[in-house]
Image 1 (cartoon, rainbow, N blue to C red):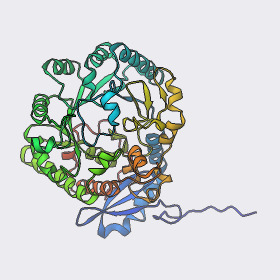
Image 2: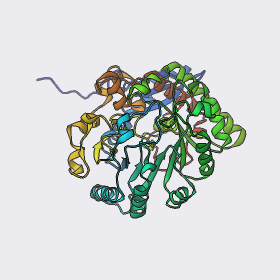
Image 3: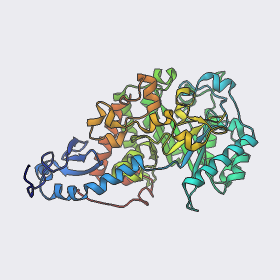
Image 4: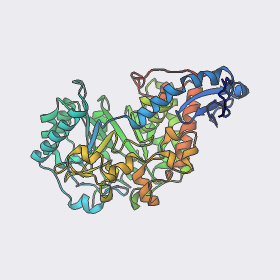
Length: 464
């Protein structure tokens, strides 16, 4: 029998009972990030203090809190329940954008819900959410998505009127079918509105976003943007491609001039060939994306008015407090099938809108199957069970819980497998390093929503 011993060893990083810490260089002349990858907790240290950081009180404090921090990350990754739906009331679209992730046949000739069908769908969804969220104050998000949801205007307006007291509605649109009456209805019902625009001029914006006949609507979209700029639940999405990647700083100036408060600079998804053909090289994307972020800081300093780039702000918030992130793409498992799911115009259910058109990832049908069973389907489990620990080289990456190797639909389309790193791996690394540099300079507030931390609680502060 091996004798028992009382073991008391001072914790050091990477040996004995100490945590495994990764040292990451950031865009700062004198500081480094030290990250405990499994719990995604970190500290910024002076380069001259690195040795002290890896031993003594610093590590002892981390060890004391490691279980609590690990439990928080585990809950974020595996303990959340669905609270949102991306709802496509129609397959059809009046646009034929070069990079659309939905099949062309669907966008030309697809299904479209009637008002009665859509309200029946919302009735089923509301009953489901009430069984898993019992708090009276809970309001699930339901985002009308596309294709172009305003093609089914009558149906979505009927649904909003019938369920306005339960769902927190949103609408993502190309804006071309909005008019004063519809804007009045949407804002009266406090519907979150997102519109799409890809350039600061007609020639640039219309190059990738146009009708089936090749006609662009830049002036009309800008008019809608101006009318909504002061609306508190409004944002603009720019899809970043080879066409506009070199003008992102100009886009920031353009949006700031038009008093837009929140934008997304989303790298084009490679889910279909059109997107893959327009994907910018990672180093080009990274360089121009960071320049655009720098420009938002300069404008904030000059005017006191923020322009939040929300997809970057989500990563920055995830670093500052993992549970404060608003999007669930940058973690594994991603939110698809776990925090949200998507409903197509015929009622088919997918883990995320990016999977619509990929029938192998269909989990069932809203009108034919119980949602509880859909969420447990093999196709859904393939997404909700996709974790970075099973992906090489992600499993050993220091920032694996700030990135999550997204997007599984894109990765499956590019590599034919879910267990592969993101096509934008270098870009995600660059964003995280830049985010840490902002924290090191105490500039993070200029890049975040004003209320980003209202539901967060500090567990441990290891900054030195």
